[in-house]
Length: 353
Image 1 (cartoon, rainbow, N blue to C red):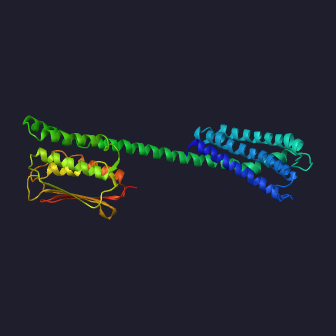
Image 2: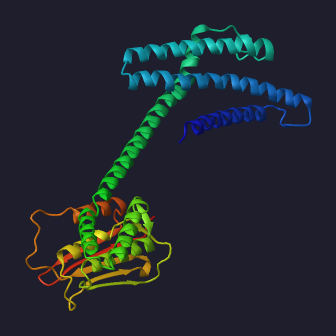
Image 3: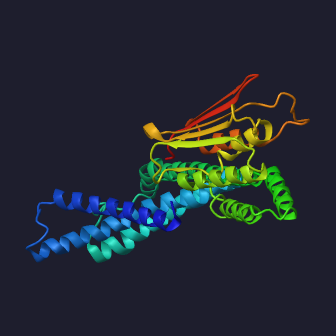
């Protein structure tokens, strides 16, 4: 909550306390009507001034406890000084109440809280202590502790969000480097051969880069833009393979305004291109996206190379697993099956909140 909202909340609470006391004192009097007689309005104004005066003592106790004593005790760890501040607060409250009752209420409003009896200093002081301290002083301490707890939670949540944002940005920065290098090499070869497909390949690559830098920089994008990205990715792969890549990409179900984590499917597709057999028409790389039943399901399957193994494990799958944990906590399911004949991935996503 913003500071200005907290200030107005405090003002509203004290106004309610004042109004409730005014109404209670007024109703308990023999005259019950709020309008119609001048003496009623005078009486109401008298009650209002007296109530505001006594509530100012309560406010002094509350804010002295909250702003001075509690901060000194809990934040600065100056315990003895906090006790001195509490004692000083009590003295200030006694002096302020004496000023109100004998300097304002009695001479100007005709209000005598002691019905003409002489003031007993000890009774007066103990009344201040036992009436205000058990309530408003303790309220100030509790309010400080509650506020500190809430602010610490908010600070921790903000730090956690910042950490997640930084981590997601780092994870996105690791996407597609080897694909980009391979594609540039393929385009260079097409250009060197003066192939008619070179301009189309450059156009496809520019669309991919534009998407990655603009829309893909956010956490979530429209699903149809992610599908367009996959189409361009597949076309580039086909161009680089000179038409010798067999890839079957199908979509099922309506594609409207659904949103999905940006570039969340690409690692699975690139993994199939990198480690799968692409030139076997009997075993094409199969990619399927299904948006039915209010869920997004994504499948990729390919025939793996028998002898192709990485010397060091890649970061692609670990990367996408971590992004799924961050962006779809408890709202995704990732199944990977690796057999001698087929490597398959099945990802299911629940709609984003």
